[in-house]
Image (tube, rainbow, N blue to C red; front, side, top):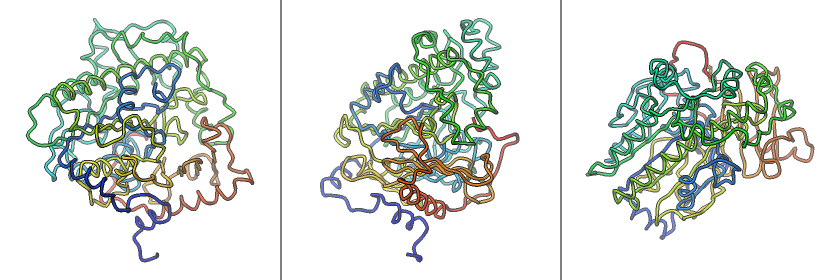
Length: 501
């Protein structure tokens, strides 16, 4: 086995379904799907369990629930990294952050990077990005066009400045909101009820996407519609801002005991001052987050309706996902950059009438790096681009099991050594290994049985009964780390400190 490439060794040792042959039925489906359209919708910071389809107690997502009823939902999908820029670059390239080089939010995805979008363009697709890429440059990355949406790389600052200048739309804040916002670290979490949504980028993302779908298409298209919500700031229509009454929102599971076995998470909790938030503060933040998600859901519904209106439903593969999740008060914390499922797990729904089973819930392990190779396989345009992600098209169709493991990294290092944190996920267990700058002189770990403990409250890392499980997952993690390849381009950073929130 030593003569095999690191990527091949990884796939042989950790399992997966990428190399088996297609059945005659599957081959026929692929042949019939040649040249079909792709609508890839991306949300920002959508926590995976905030879906009616997942049984969430108050999230209002009827359009996404409809999409799930008409397609396949994947409840075990994960971000390659639980933070914006590295995760989005992993979708574009099919590579993990240590491989594509956008290690954190203040790194740049090299403008010469070849992405999997280039491959779609070369196969005759009209490739269009509407909205946020977070590459920290204005490169095209294989997209033939990127309509202006006002969503620059410093979009949050732009929104703040726009609101300050627009005196007739200052936002409607109740007193409780002002108090809750002021107690978040640096006032980072905030929002405003707007009657004029032209102030914020998501309305432009919606309108530009609708405009594109209404065109007369002479060739298949790949439309990447990338929304900002429910990422803060929750600058959203008034009806959604006040859709949820904080008094009706159950408080999150904020038991700080769950952090005691994780020095890094505990250090972050204390450094960022999340302990200043009261239960009522969490309710306010959850109400505004859920309202932002409601607006996003409405916008997704309008895209789906437009597909129907234009007669594109049967010819378009729709994939909905998020770049990462959101702690949303879980363990008393907000934001992301953690390997807990709240931050690392993502919603993933795929719909294609006649090709993908309707109303299915597929427990396969899926990663962001798999998305574009899988989409290419589904539309009959297999990629041979050296991606780390696998073509899981047969898995999406329900014809083959998924991989045995998937991974997420946090704190990828520019010196080429192992990232500061690594998640190894099997169908039942999750092993998190922390090292480097994450608050410990020696590596430490967490092991969770997610079947019995979905909220990750009981660390079983030192349980003798699970010693073999821990060792096996650790070995898989080492194989994964050894398989990572160096970036093809020199690393580049923006000025300023690391933004890990």
